[in-house]
Length: 344
Image (tube, one colour):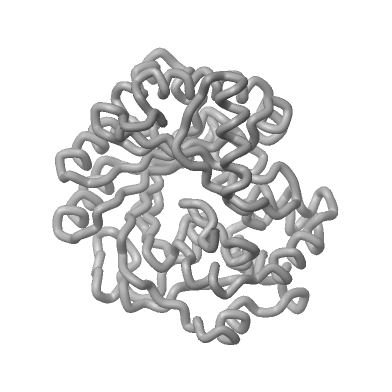
């Protein structure tokens, strides 16, 4: 059983494998929502279009739910980007969240950012920091981001090198610090600059994250005292039991205990604010998903509007959100979303 589950994300239907894993072991997530009057779960208002520009990345992080890495070839085409731009011209969706992999590695990345900026959209780029130092062609990314008022969101698992490198690879912390200094140098994270720099914390093991406000204070104190680095906010995100992190849980024998923690920590208030209620996720090949995690499990949105080419806002805003047992990760404790804790 373990060998089958450990390769679940590589199989044709990873969602079916996860359902088989969860069957009979934990309460059905839909029943949990029904118990607090939230099922079926539906969107509130579509405010964010999160677009995955591809799975190629210069890093191979242990917790990565995208399975991103240098060997991944999936890249969003310019044609799919044009479809996204059409949607954004025709609909009042103000925020565009660009993710990957490393979204900057898409050959059309800068063109796309320029087009989004011309539309007056608020642009978020999920930058892994080390990409800035990966190649000379990326050295000017801080200036490019600043020119288009891009909000930069970057993963930094801890303010110490040992814990960061344990999750993201040897030498990553040192490079991340250098990149953060480059971003600070053009104004990112500095009071009054208008250039937002937010960091992301993921636990380095099979544990629940602590309160966001406490961790943010620790990060700000330590990063400033050690390196003079400043940033705006820390987003605390729970590791989702899918993909590489699922492999880790099973290999380390922590799977059942971790899932039980998530179930026991279910929080109805956090469930009310889950990101799938105001965010729509677009995959590198243009398909639509309720969230980035469903995208990696290939659980597409319910209904007939399943691709950017058939985008129907009215239908999408009245859809029933697709759920499965991994959704416990977003509703445990103080909640979890791409913007941090939802009940902080």
